[in-house]
Length: 286
Image 1 (cartoon, helix red, strand yellow):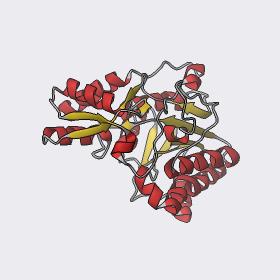
Image 2 (tube, helix red, strand yellow):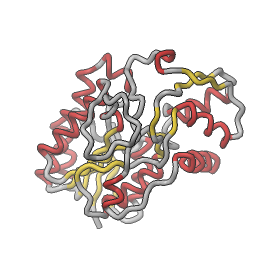
Image 3 (cartoon, rainbow, N blue to C red):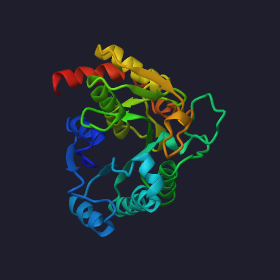
Image 4 (tube, one colour):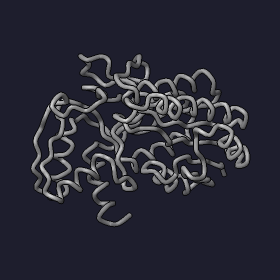
């Protein structure tokens, strides 16, 4: 039985990974209180004591707009700390599985076809640049790594993700203005966790895109959410410029899951099915 550390075990993806991995592996869950990845010496002490066969890192500084104001913190968390984890895993001969983002893309403003794992990244904001830096450091320094790029995550353990916020505001009757010119493949963390478990059991290494299938804008995503939830919402489509976020988001950041297919794994469910499963889980109190 493998010993698998999950860093960020209480987050929306981490909690689903702990649940899914626990079926076949010995799970060593580490919350932020157990391991602070920016504490390089502390991280080495904790991981060396646990001697894992694999480390799954879900921790990140991922508040996209905040990253614009705190660039050094973004690179410290999303790049320097990741390099440290890679070096620790080298010394332990452990596999490091690191979660990255579709926001490493976006600089190709005319893009209309999904990005493959081989496409050159071109981030538009500090968050994407810091995550790309972390990826590149792993490729250079970590012998055994798996970089899982995903998109628009939401899960039952999260209360600040797009879906949770939309539901909360709609239930309060708030008017909602949602951007309709950013297209992506939003991904339910329970589906992603299930697929990551399969990837861990496979020989896949390097970079793999893992998202729910299909393409939508944030506005289309919200509209489908309210349809499935049976909510009537005051929902209006707007442009990114009208919304006025500090960080520039990609107009198109859909990920093609080609490496997943090459690994012999079936595609993820459609994003609409992800929403339906999320709402079913929410109703059941899972």
